[in-house]
Image 1 (cartoon, rainbow, N blue to C red):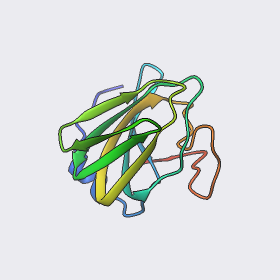
Image 2: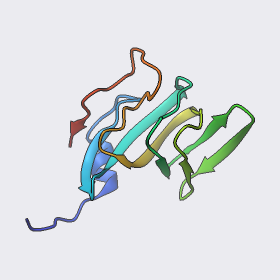
Image 3: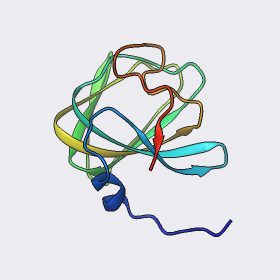
Length: 121
């Protein structure tokens, strides 16, 4: 398999919906996903997976039960497994996710935004 260059701006331009992660690459059992956020997500945690959120464009707050961490373009945060969290974005934000391939976007919660099989773009 020959590696190809990927462009984040092109990947983000390929879709408009919010809270619907798209797979852009695989890496050692992990997936690189892109997602657009706007508004508040559901409170949830992941029993077995850590998640990394890297802000490509915009800003959002990662809420935890005891504090809020604000992130802007170029910032990232790793949410350890078992830690309840909720991303909230006042305006649209573009985020790159690094997480195990089996990670469900809503983790311990299930709602209308649960994406069992993310699209590959």
